Length: 423
Image (cartoon, rainbow, N blue to C red; front, side, top):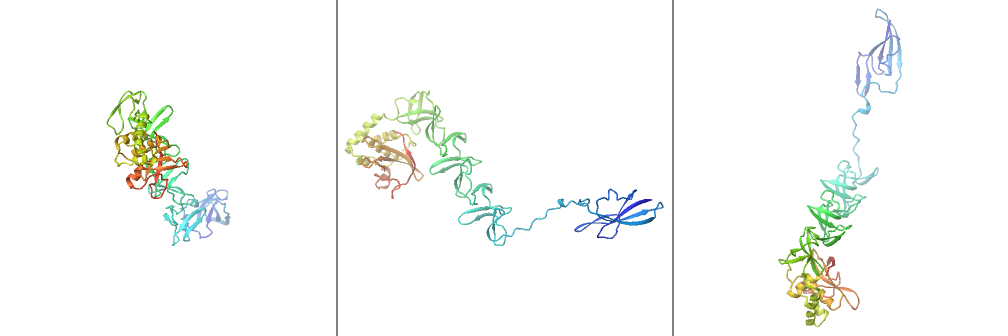
């Protein structure tokens, strides 16, 4: 005699020998399995339900029936794993209009309850809300292939920022700038890819430049690094020729001073060639200081050795002077004394030289008025010890007095990014 178990699901009648999946859960039809010892077979073990125990004679006819209930084991022994079911999207977040802090993240609700995304103008500032969920962005954000930076409150920044080790410049639109930028009449270089401001030596488009550390403004003029002297122009270490230094000129090759050079060389802007011995112009280009002093004394003899009359003598008809750059006070003064014409650099150099001959402490200044290069004079008043601005070119061009002004004085020019020129 053999025994078999017939499993009957709790919620259905006895069906055929099939397992069916009903909506919302599992339900079983009749399942037949045989066992020699009358126990629940292994393949049926652990499946909860009610079983009919049937005893079958050798001729195949049933002889007895017993009902047995199998308790759940806590294991999912059949059907699909619920953890593998397709996730159900949570219902859309409903927001009140305006800013809301949810789980430490700021959102901005539209009037219809949805989250605002993209750019938001709020109380004189721009904010960026992530397109996928409206979360307010802080720190760097890449929007339409441009980088922007938001402060800890989410407000977009502009201008110079230093969020870590490096400085960056954000334009008025907030987008990060790269490459060359001019800021307050100084040139800076920002990495073409990362946008970080460069300092020290840097190769840009195949040319060496030097950017002052830590400010990052491009260096021009003479600079010593180690035992080597460099002469930097607006085009970096690219100049070959004669560069001014006090009362002489020195030979530089691609911006590097060469004390071994002997031969002929030119000054930028001049057609005349000069003889160079051991890297220095033989005899000098600029007249020696004594010769310049003699020329100054001759002019002072005409003006009665009066400082104001000397200033008036330097107000000449303005002409474009072809030689640009900081070639030193003596160079420009010599030109003016001989030609009695020139630009602002020539006029300022002449007055500086005459004032020094009269015993005044005077300095020729180079800088900018707006974005235009300009030169004027700082002179110390012997009576009160203060420095004043004297600008013969201002008087030449504007017709207003340029005598003994002070910086920021109403009705005068606004000078910026200035420094004292060498002699």
